[in-house]
Image 1 (cartoon, rainbow, N blue to C red):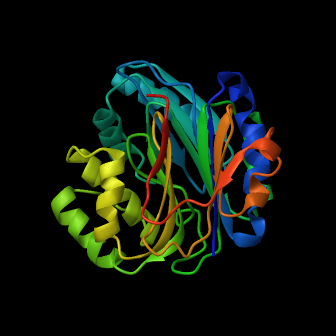
Image 2: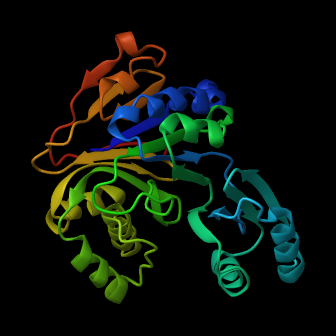
Length: 300
């Protein structure tokens, strides 16, 4: 049993308050997931030719400023750094593969948890309220976000196993549920898709599956619909992309989910209590998403 939330702001005037709106949504799912929590925020797109990376290390004394200086000097590029607890967001004026190869060679102890034009991803062990405070979620502006609170059932309680999982550029996924065929599918994706996995968590496999299908040319909707055949299990997904977010349940839809929409925002949560305090929730259109149906909102 886990809790998932998502918030897409249709009204740009609300974007400075995205973190303030998302924080109580995440905390509202504490009873469903007390082991760890995390969120992905979409904001501040980088310029063409640059890449945004979110990095994690368990070393609280890690010298992020030294890393930025070293990276800037060796690649002759500009590097911007923002540190939040055990994570740091780096904006690097270089192609992704150039930066990844440099990181693997010079700092293999660092883990890349998110990458793209605008995604920033943070997750840690602990109660959702503690994670919200640790990463200062209420300070964030942005256009949309997804979040997760975890009750560990199929893998260890670690930062690495916490959600969200991101396996593609600006592509991020959280899940309430479980997949029964994730081990076989993980092997297939490694062999045929070249997807790299950092954990044995089934949600990371689902994220990798979507990245693989979209890498083959499928749209997000097409990738999710294909997953109804290829992903064996019971689940509710919330997916973040550069332009928006999507929600889908499996064909049986035994995992709870609520969607709500106003002229200003679209929100989803495992339970309505995480939506109830949003401005205008009392007059929102509220419904339960149908089984095997993709719901997608995008600025594009």
